Figure (tube, rainbow, N blue to C red):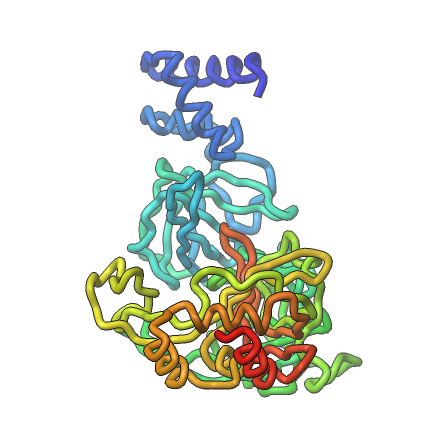
Amino acid sequence: MEKEQVALHIERIRRALEKEGIEANEEALRKDFLRYIEFDISPDEAEMRILRKHGVTPRDTVRKKIGEIGTEPISVSVRGRIVSINSAVSTVDGEERKRYYGILGDETGTIPFGAWDVDLSGFSKGDSVEIDGAFIREWNGNPQLRISRITRIEKIDEEFSVRFSPRAAEEAKLADIADGDRVSIKARILSMEEREISIRGEKRTIYSGIMADESAKVPFTAWKDFELRPGDLIKADGAYVRSWKGVPQINLDDGMEIEKIEEEFPSMEELSEGKRIRIEDIDGKQGMTDVLFEATVLQIRSGSGLIFRCPNCRRVLQDGECQVHGDVEGMPDLRIKAVIDDGTGAINTIIGKPLTEKILGTDIEDCLKEVREKMDRGIIAKRLECVLEAVPVRIRGNLVSDDNGYTLIATDIEIMADNPGERARELIEEWGV
């Protein structure tokens, strides 16, 4: 920001404090203001946070029904029921920061909310709350509630029926959904299972599975028995999106209406195939389910081959020790950490034990035996380098995203050249590894 703009905001803050009889050091106000700006907080919201820090409630905090909230950047007071609440840890400037996110609803509509560095662990799905002093920000053309340390949030004894208004539920393809969205979707149910969970000591049945359209496959969870079956084509208005391990998921709440429809749409067989994409096409997206790449293995990374895991937490041991549980007897495992490139970009890939055994043409017991005989822990990784590096592959799996970028967790791999087992044996003889 320009110095003149900063000075204008500081003067507004100083005058507001002065009206309440509060004297404040202008340099301290400036440091607080610029610190908020560095964290991508808008100047208006930064003003409000500083005022509340000094015990002053901004004059423009207004009470609104959720359906009345627009995208104007103002401070609001709202009441409603928590439709969903989740947490995640992100790394910002090398420091881990926890955030909460979810959906708040009342009889007029729903709105996403987010909170950084605010402890909302005492709040759960279904709680009725009053939130005073949350700031409105715009995201993808829709409003969101931003809860900060100076926002007051408390449980209240009031019942709310929730209306999933179409105001913010825009039509979307599954490939385009992102964490926090509310969307209207058409998709076919590919699989579904019923399971029982416990929420605050109360058992509840939920229904989860995979749905798909022509653009992508996505996991879903239904909090009510909508009588869905594999093969059903559905339309859902107001579905909300949350991410789990970087992969967006559709949530169908018990207050929604799901319509089964019949129209021209890809069949289950067509949608069940892995979605072939290019690496350049994933830029800007979150994770994806069941994607297919045709690429070349550029590199077998350190940490591949025979490894040992902690029997308690399954972390990979370093020099025989777990960073959490200390000196433990490790459990043997096989994996491949690789970099693949399809000509449009490169991503990291992790390949687990069953597929690694398939590629080597042997099993983990034989790998252990060979390592002991040759007294070389790195021999399996060397073999994998010989077999895979610079080799074209067709690889399928789930794409996850985090602060370090994209990683493909492989579920299947096909070497688009020789038989991998025969190739491994030939290279062992040729290179003597």
